[in-house]
Length: 345
Image (cartoon, rainbow, N blue to C red; front, side, top):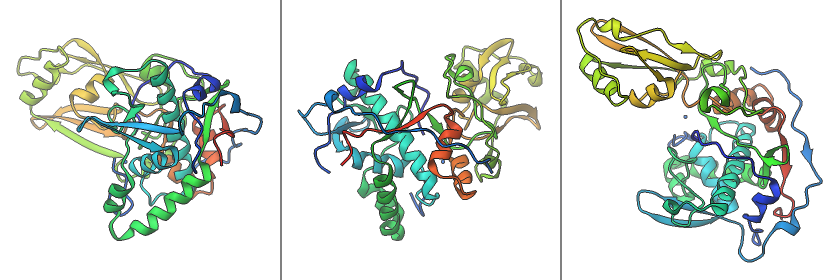
């Protein structure tokens, strides 16, 4: 899933200056990662002609760094989108959910590429983004995905090829700039705002009910630690815990309206929910914490940062009859679905 990196707005023209024209055309469908009202679909822009902003020096590609090997591989846009889609959402999900995911993945990739080519990060070794889901969105090549799908590979490969072809070159924009289409696997039942997560208000990353997520098999998770283990992890946050009255190590957290832990007092020191999630290896920052039966127990709801589209929520909406434009409009309200015409076949 895409991680919590926010970018300054980039105009569509600026993005396309960095995105040359394209001259050439896990098991059982699982992700290698994790009922809505009828909504008005995003406005589809038909007047964006970006031909003058494209360069014909090279074909439209994404350069992907594998941090483990240090290798940078170049993929054409279609093949990259296939690999990002297959890596980030189960191929067994409904096609309309997969289409929504593909638009989000392509928009994010274009945003990453534009930012990187405008101000290169030397750590990326000339790449536009990585295949590491802890940094960027996940990516696996076609061969790896098909191996993971096993006997269903032919079916899922054809399914994802059809999805990619249906939405290739479609992006979400807001006020003429590419939208930061972050997404996550499962919400806690309501998505979170960008302001609460990252301290920056983003008009289209607001809190949305996503009650279908409550039915996800991975909605609830539990993590427990002995007092010694808990104290050791707290120390990585700069918190020293001592004494045998373990319940008194914990204070009363501050929560957002969506339920995300904003701050949590540990040993008298306030730490953020994001820090707690990382230090204690939690699936989200929506959690309850108590000391009981000799252990500190986290009860965690959802999976991921909680902003933008819930992938499981998209699945539920698609199963209820929503198409991908309605899904995108619900989770990214106010954005415009735009086709990059000069890139399209």
